Length: 258
Ligand code: AMP
View 1 (tube, rainbow, N blue to C red):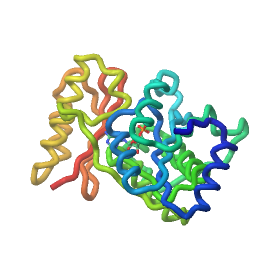
View 2: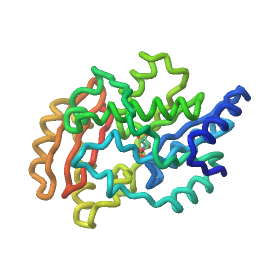
View 3: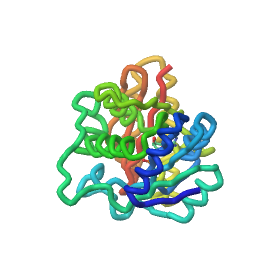
């Protein structure tokens, strides 16, 4: 497995691989890898000749008061997990931005509301870095998790609107046995906080099965839980989406509405 951090080296590899005409799978991540990420990797491994995992904690998608500095960075463990799954190349740059970087990708409809409202500038950072990573790695296929439902919508729209030649593959949310959606941020939770997170996931699943008024019901139930602060509950066309704070940790989750 190749591990590279230089942009020039990444461009050399992707140019050679793009020429081969074979399927190249990209799994973009911020590291602190878990089974959710590895499920994306395994899907890419099954469908592509080469698999690239990128590990980059992208500063432009964090707000000034968010957890950029304390975001976990267990590099050796991440690399071991990638090696075990047969990843061909890990691109882990230290920095992807020029000091005077001034060009951003801004989706202006599906990025509104929900996480876009709670985290101003977040999706601008996500769309910008994802397009940069597409340009650097030149994948035929790119793998994203349904856990970040609004992110999927933003990237889908960007790919459509900007004619990006990549096939998006969306993978269902992977959960721990207790029902909590896997997330790098779960590492922040104390055992007591984790129990609150499990209750959040349980109620969301339950609400998604209700025939009607699931958003209002879920919001009311979540407000009863001590140690949990509701950010939003929103029903989209086909999903029930929610975000909560448990202590300092912000968790998101969503479920298809029956
Ligand atoms: P992140 O490192 O959190 O930016 O996530 C990288 C990719 O993994 C994104 O496409 C996420 O949606 C996906 N992902 C993260 N957690 C999960 C999960 N529990 N199930 C499925 N995909 C996930």
